[in-house]
Length: 280
Image (cartoon, rainbow, N blue to C red):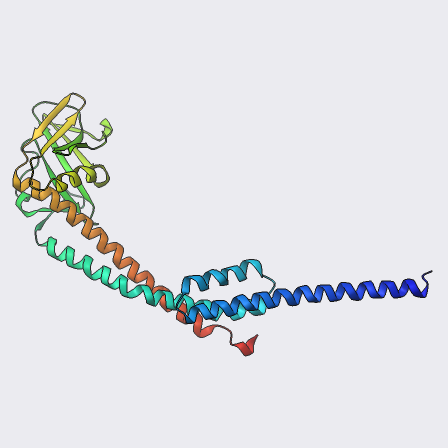
């Protein structure tokens, strides 16, 4: 049997334990509340990313503080709203510049219908009436999504065509050799199509050379042939890269602007439906 002293000791221990638990709970609630106050102040200062980071800290480190986290819903919505608004104007300027670049170039290209069942493409107008398979040469093409490719043909002497290179005063830049499986041989001609990612460095080297001398070669396992790089072809190649980049930038800018506007609408909906202080 416990004596009176033992009972008192047990009661005191239980009371101390309860007091300790209560103090820890209060400490966590106070700490979470202070972080929320800091986040709200950051929103007022237009420091939205820092505010969101603090709210993330509350959600991860103080999951038990339901009241504070509920109060943080409106603060988070306000931070996301402010961040979206701050980014929409630059995104709009980016979109406008991209549209201007596309508009300035699109009139210099002509649409070409693809073979039956295949998508068409655009080529520089000065090359639109040139049959790419008529002789050894290249033709830049920009597809409906704005991606560049180069159709290349070697006639007469098979070389196992697999790459394109440009030689300027700065040196030679060559595309990585492609698989032989992509080479088509028809009526004594070799035909290959090079994707944008394979020829971007080559075309950028040609662009960087400006008006200085440059040579264009089609290379293969059994040698290489030089393509006559006329001023018209040279300009067409560089312009095609610029047009493809402009088209892709326009699409990316439009998607970014749309994403920000969608984020803004969602943030405002969340802000309008967030719990009021009286709901806590």
